[in-house]
Length: 103
Image 1 (spheres, rainbow, N blue to C red):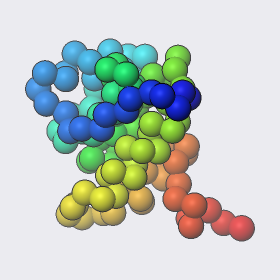
Image 2: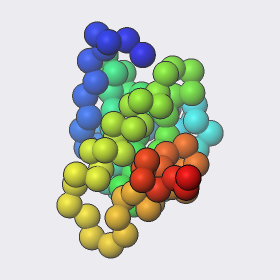
Image 3: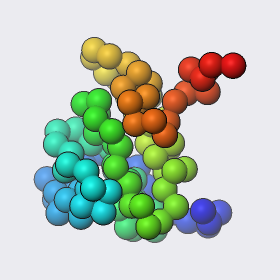
Image 4: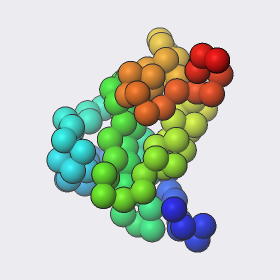
């Protein structure tokens, strides 16, 4: 992680399909469909978080854990119906809110 990197978090558009497909292939995952939050680092798509409860995808060849955490924080701030995002993110194994870990 660089302290001077520019991180942009935004919702996906139809124009992001090719970038999401590339990212999913790098992460050996399915291409996310529907509403997705995308994190770009210095103009390159680094991670994506489907808002339907599926696991986040990220570039495994670049530092991305901090970017996925930012996506999760942004998802928590979005209005959602149904299951809260913090519960949906636990399935990935990498992310769990600090208060959710057992002592």
